[in-house]
Length: 261
Length: 205
Image 1 (cartoon, each protein chain N blue to C red):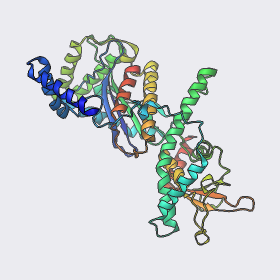
Image 2: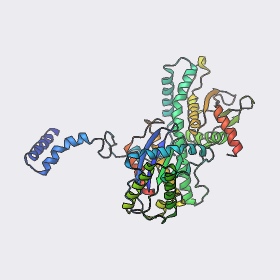
Image 3: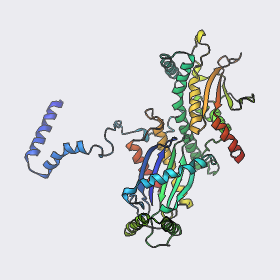
Image 4: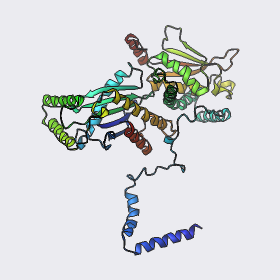
């Protein structure tokens, strides 16, 4: 069916080229123009737009805000990620480092998304209730404590639909830069069974990577690790240990003196 | 008013930049900076020099939009900053047009006065002739008007317009960042993003 149509097109073009007219000029120029002006042509060369003409820029970022992800498919995907990370590693630490690296870029993205969603929801609620206080966009965390609250509350709710279970500061005077966030039952570990010989492993290292990305994005140099700390009630209890770098602690002192909250 | 907008990564690498002019009050959306076309690097130079102030201000003020933070009087360039939470910096340089009749608008006249003063102080004939030529160019195009946004770069209306512009760009930036094919620190090459930023500029500035 396409063959005859092609033939008619060919004959059409032949007839136009036989007649000396402005149309012919245009026709002759057309192929060369396409090659030469490819980088200039509208709107983009080589950019392939979906058939419904919707790029990622046409989709609303709050579209999937309240939609829930299938836990089964997440568990499957996460299991595959762990398997993938495990394929080329030498030990448990290496494996956790790889999981951490997988989570890190996610943290950077979630940070931007989180703030965008808070802005857009606060302005929309301000439009309905017309209160000026709720319209102010959220502040970037400048000190450690607001950052930890951001992770403990909004970030955890964005990821897991609930806040984290505890937020603690190290009691040891030697390590004032250590903070702990506790999750009694991390969602990522629900369907992960760790073999006995790898009992040190905690696959929530992935979440630790996300936290590290968030901290780094905010300008807080941090090392985050995930540790098992089972209790009788919560066998899967995990502690995320955040170790802030020296530069952060120094700045913290300066900001405290300056009265920045 | 002419604008130069740039996005800088947390490590100061430029990710995106665009120059455009105002579309409000009869503007045609074409940037007319006070430098000749061969000296467009001046915009980048001025905008990057404001980074020191941005980095100082970002720890004192938790807002994402830092408002007008820096002025470069010799070029009458005003710089507004917006910080994405993940560390990207959005910087907008705006330069009000030089009005044909000096002293019609207070902000513009002070800008011109400061420019002339610094030119004489530095004593470089190149700078003064550069200013003179651009003055003639803007004076010949009598499109300049004294609307609130164009004439007063530090007025509340301008701050609000820039804030709206920044928020719209931020929305599109988040969309870019959420793409699984984008890594932090990559140049934003999407033509769709560029058209979106242009549209935001048309809408607000």
